[in-house]
Length: 354
Image (tube, rainbow, N blue to C red):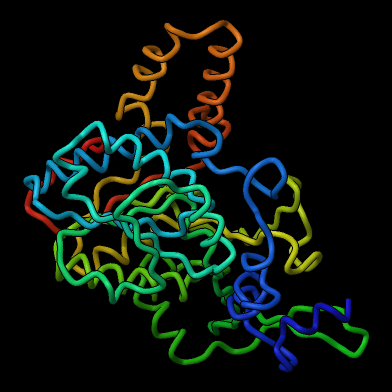
């Protein structure tokens, strides 16, 4: 347990978001800078690794959105948190089937983990790809931002409302090196920020993605200035609740969030109702939030699977539809994952959304 103290950075206590930011992203001891989290040998599997069809659908959506923008001669595609690069690699292959778009596209990968960046460079075969750690390099538009399981990986703050006061959750450790939790009166700046959201007003337990909203603000400034949109796909909920959604996974099994620190992934469920309110408050338009099942099926994933399966052996066909079921099943990723689109352009017709 003594090794856990290092995540406090010589401080006796830290708020939930700052503590898990150290656990996940510290350059020396953070999870994402010291572990390969993806795939069977990792801790979890994302949609692009489950089926290449997922990545194909994203590629088609990106091309159709470029057409929606009037086929500009230059279009900036920015993937948020590219994982191991599997999604981008397939996108680049699909883009070659659309020569005009392929010539116009500029692909940027926003990645802060040096370890994952190395992994991505190994897996991605394509030109016109640039890695960035901030958005300063993107100076012209239009822009299309997209992220799959991006927002859930950004640490959140947690609060409770009691007797008319707001208290923030902290982690601290004692001489025995065990980690405990406590609540302290919330800072004025956080109280005032939370008051701005009707979504959070009546909750007794609040998860507030302060760091995540700070990152989204930077993206929205780019969208407002350069014109464009943001597509986010993640697991989460569409109606605010009083639940603690922090969770940890290690080798594809649930893990106590305060154990195996730096060796296990820690995430939280995304409050899509809050995201929608945040986008609207910042003068972006928002399409109705839909499930991953609705999005992929509207985009034609079943038709694409049917075409591919005609040339497959029985075992290959069985594998194809087993993977597809995992993406679409209402009791699996199909309904658990939600899709939100925020945009700033005149044409409101986006493929996949009504």
